[in-house]
Amino acid sequence: MKRSERHHLKENAFAVAMANLGGQLSDWGRGLAIGIAIGIGFLVLYGAYGWWTDRASGQAGALLADALVVADAPVVPPPPPTPPPAVDADGEESAPPPPFVQPPGTYPSLEAKMNEALPRLLEAANAYPSTQAGITARYRAAAALANIGRQDEAATHYRQVIDQDAGVYARMAALGLADVELARGSAGAAIELLESASAADAAAELPLDGVLMRLAIAYDRAGRTSDARSTYQRVLDEFPASPYLGSAERELEALSTDG
Image (cartoon, rainbow, N blue to C red; front, side):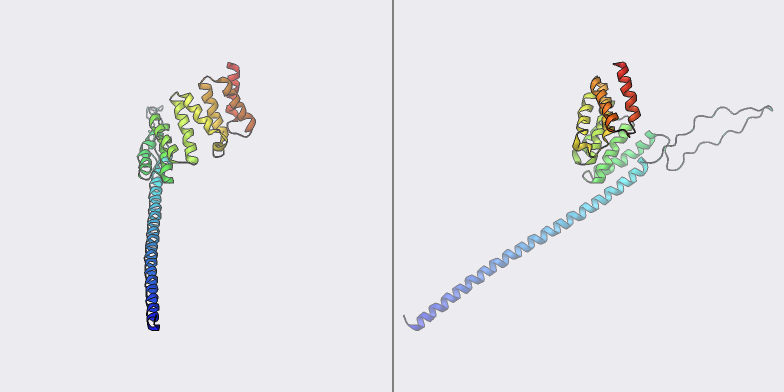
């Protein structure tokens, strides 16, 4: 082969190699560009999600705060009816007392207060159900419903809190639901909830003496007197400084007398 032909072949090989390298670089460039685009898109989505989450949390918190202004307002009932004005020796009537005026920011009864607070609490709970403020609002709504005797509705919202939360509000909702079950005469359902609430993992987040008092009451109502006695005794033995100590002593004495 002539020298000129060998030189020509080398040039062609070099050209082919450079062309292949250029194609690879072009492919790498496209891949890099795609990767950068995906990364930017992810960051945009992450930022948008964070912005939406912060915005939702802020709005839920504002709705909850507005509801709690009502839910935590004091109750100032009107005074009882005044007796007829007294008549003095001269036959003149004493001046009647001034009419009662409800103090601003107060409510005449618990029911009146809760009836106004409930729509606000449920608005926050339903608008932002997965936020902490929304869960808190639903728990407070359930407690409000229980306080005014609407036990079936309270049970529904307590169960929703248990389903939506994995923390202390779920534990507290289980206690609230147990109280509702007791009020509805379902001692067995209450016992199941309270036995779970008195387990070690749950008791770390709840006042165990209070849970045990509820459990003892549920045992008593279910006719399990022996279990009720032993549970009251646990309160006495394990919690000597408990605010429930006096109640536990009285209930235990009553059960011993009845037994």
